[in-house]
Length: 80
View 1 (tube, one colour):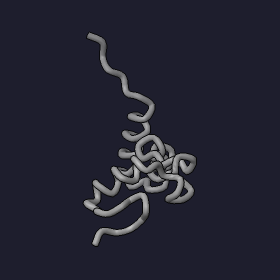
View 2: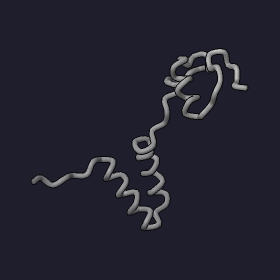
View 3: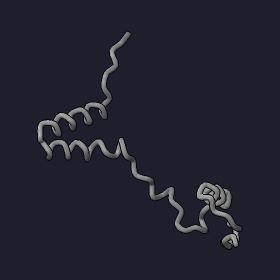
View 4: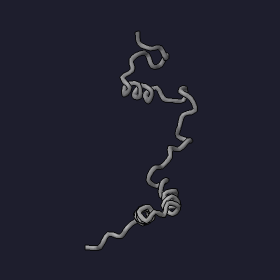
């Protein structure tokens, strides 16, 4: 069976941790900045709605159900 080789991200993280353990804070931070987008990607601004009016009714209904909200979602009227 072939040996598993580390990915580039594995190398970055392992090297970052070694620098951290060696008290090389600047080196660890530099590598953390490089690795961070691959571990914690940001939400794309292009995917976010500009306003609540841009959200599909079905998506809004599902969101409100998850929150346990009640009422007429389409009219914006809260439950009594």
